[in-house]
Image 1 (cartoon, rainbow, N blue to C red):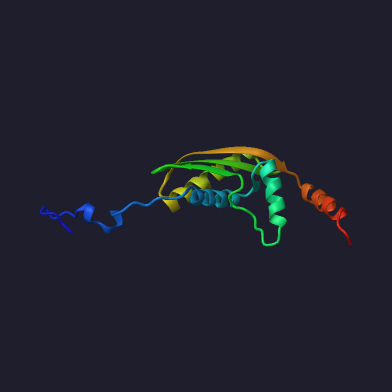
Image 2: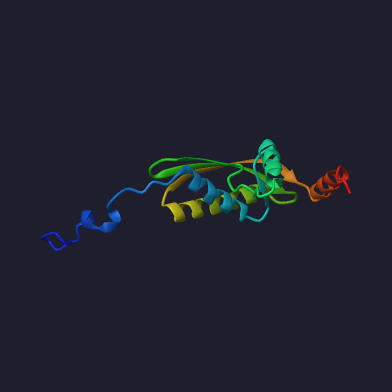
Length: 145
């Protein structure tokens, strides 16, 4: 529709009619996936969250939670994101944190249209190369053969 001056009436634009709301859980999943895509990130979540998640993941039919280690606040036009990371040993933590911030901001803003005002990162642990070997040995010692 056009007004008498010949310009388009923005109120008549179908894309502008109505309101879109985005649930916190949507932003949590996007941020979690975007953070995991960065090289040098081993896992998300602090000690307790990872322990509980690991037990839950071993339950038949259980699956790894994308939301572990991610908290968000979502408003009408903005969001703030808190991440808990475990990084690989040997990586430059400040570089990984910067890449995570960039990837999370780009993904959330592109997919939701929300402005990301901050991405706070807490590095809770460093994954050592021999951590998996130790955990595999300790978990196999108690198994019945």
